[in-house]
Image (cartoon, rainbow over all chains, first blue to last red; front, top):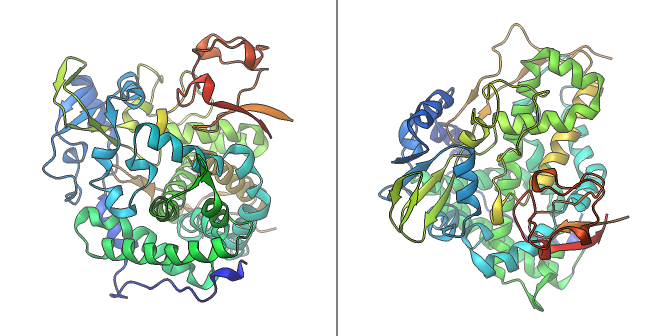
Length: 419
Length: 54
């Protein structure tokens, strides 16, 4: 543990009874399956006026209200928009993630974005995060599995995936273990500004204050941890500005923890509800990479993202004015019947056609995707190795993937034989 | 071992595989890939790749 963070304490929310995890679940709604609505929209055309969220039962997003929304659907058009510099991030994300995290690379475009992104991506290259597998990821897996491995049954979400990626990131930051619950709580609370919860900005401020202090400590006494590395990294001969670093760290504890928990949960739910495919993967672990890609295609962690139109433009015959906010529905790309046969079916053996867009594409493609794959791989291998005859618990409800924008099964009740 | 890695997204070029979707055949050295070829994962330019230790 890095002794340099001793003395720094992350303040909890003032209202200790506020449960951001529950509020977050409520804010995402309980849409069981958005895909019928997505397919119905796609059948009418790839571009529609209005917000993606409007088609589902969800708490209103106050930060994105009043903007001129258009929905973009289908693989080719989603890919086109994500690759076209006509459509920028800053003016879209400054309404939401910019308020929650601050000046992150998500709210930058052009040369400024490229300059900073390269530094952050370098810290998460495949060969770099692969080394975390043994040193950071496996110990987290072992610790979490320790709570249920002797019980013969578990809820793989509540007992495992919900905590797993967050704890990996937390260990990589080398922060004090006792503060992890408060960190997780504030990381999730940051995004609740979207529904007008004041705890959102409170969490943003408190995490900012903490990381400012941490950066000062780690610059004065650098270690080998991720924060020390970023605190002393340079872009064009200059150190990264504090506001960019702090924003990245605020985003990291959320993005690194929240999305991969969903991806890992979906991977497990997909395999457990398709026992023949689970058996194949159990017997042949070389199938894990394609199982992961199919899970990401089938139910990616983020169903829709945002872009801003910098000029008047026509997409698929629809005129879109300058200033419009495009809801770029990644989930529609990944279930596009023009690219994926029988797209709603989970099939790890499907013919490989095009890359899935779960991590988007273009300049803002997910920085953490390689770490996500390492974590999903390690988790699946460990569960299959140590939980013999892993199967759904027939006495409890089957996993139900819910949500319209961030989708996840709330529970995965399993049984397994004990060694 | 070294490989050419996209600095924007970390995608790593494997010369044994090539880039089928871009018409780059297996066995093509990175240096022989056309200069206007883009990263298949994020569309970054060939110039944004760096030779790195794996």
